[in-house]
Length: 292
Image (cartoon, rainbow, N blue to C red; front, top):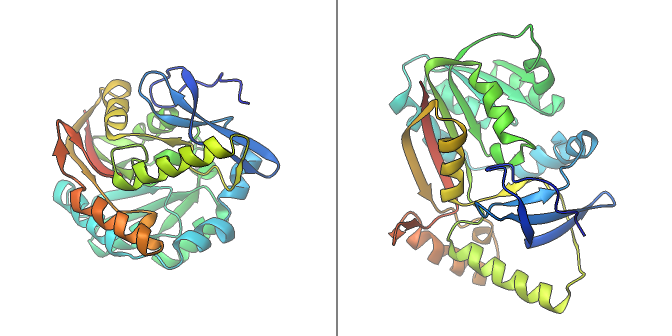
């Protein structure tokens, strides 16, 4: 079992014990999922080391596997949202750009695209596809690189970061005063019919096989709710003023499953974004902040 020593990556609270999805085995190492006693975020312990992360985010096994047939319409919609708040021809940095889907979308909207990607092969592919500068994280972090940007975007990136607060603090040094931080990604423990169904089956499986450990990749290093995610930005980064916040539902991953899962996903989609007693249903968020 995990030693329960790691603090919550969002609020720095202490772990209260294990939580769904409990544990996963990758490359002969077991990673446990712990729930924060304070903000209720679920996070991976221990954090995968650099060698493990390199295997997880390899272009062939990750980007080509998960994003080769991606629907590009969400990226276009995100670029249109960015256009509502950013000035024309703004310089936009997509941190964690993958093979360049969002970069293509913002370039089409007249912005100046720049990318950063963890995997060198993915960075090279994005640069070739989009025709813009794409650096690796190591090159971007060098002291000699000092470019400032009007907009910094993190799309489905925050949950992959071992220390999201440290990364954002570093990125804000590259953002001009009055610039925009545009963040979007999953809310994997937020009220959603898909989440509740998956959690129910997870409880049943855990009850019948308490020692079972699934195989897979611990690529999402934390799973959180809209409340905890919003609190993270509000408390950790008072220099950021929120100007846009949206919670919605994608139906993932049930939307791509069998007919039963698709039916559950459709019900989740029907109530996504709606609020009951102040709780908004949905498994994804978009947020835009101004650096003051």
